[in-house]
Length: 433
View 1 (cartoon, rainbow, N blue to C red):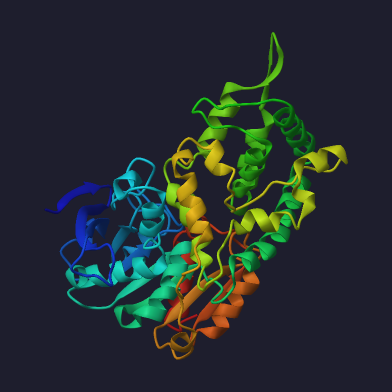
View 2: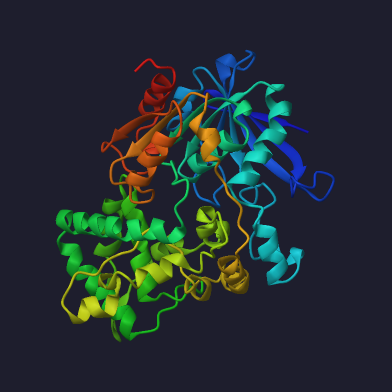
């Protein structure tokens, strides 16, 4: 039963759907999907077209907006919006250390999680679309990994789409994970250099924290083993519009004086564990590299292997050589499954996923080359999370796709830029820009 309620300026309705776990076996096991319908209060009784929002990730449920935050206010001027928790996230049959043992042991869990990539998400969307729209095609807005899903949608079921809008989420159609990370590490180094240029005092602060972690064993209050590699991974913040500033504020109060000498403060540790823990989005760690897998090659902990090709990211060598400590970015490593209490029970499952060699293609280049769906994409110059060159190559491969390449925003431009970003993409898709 659907439940409706109100927030300032909007009417919300909780929607639940039943879909096959495996769409190739429609009579087999099912899972539940959750989505939140949002409509402007003054348009609640109108027959409006639908906009489906696909969140970035993988592994994150849809945004929990209050009222008309970010881009939502602009969308509600003309759409009824569906904020979908993709399978395994949010309220959509969550997959985590608590629920995955219901599937069996690590091998069964790994098999299960192969059905949580973009192709399955698209087929979920097509399964629920008739119930939501009455069969009419809808507009999809895909942020980051949601954009990957939108490109898969254009490949697998373009008949379900009226328009596709993509923000920071044009994937390479054929790059292996190794290619993705070889392009990523130099990009991350540029972001770190820009941070230190903005906040030169952070060079010594980061080195001091790294030295502390290299010489002591630190366990955060939630049980997270806080290693120097974990500290470096906080550089993931540098891909967001305000991330450099947030990292600076985190570093400035890291230590306090104690009877036993300087120690990492409780306040710093509390913030760090919130940023590092995957308790709220474990699928991100489990299937992150699998979103790039499309053939018989295993991902084989790609980010960890490729990092060895960039020795400047070695913390011990940086400190020994009096070099600035380099933070890392959007990468998943096997040590995370040792450090994070939310991931430790899933380490063997993750290793089995990393070793798989039976991945299937996610994109259809031939179909994209004859695409007829209006598509517009925001591509952020020097995006830390999604390689700009890969995105532009894909843009050229999708017939009719129009790009807005900008350095006004970072990867989270659809949040930071809100209505303006969505307005620009709608204009491009409608050939009004």
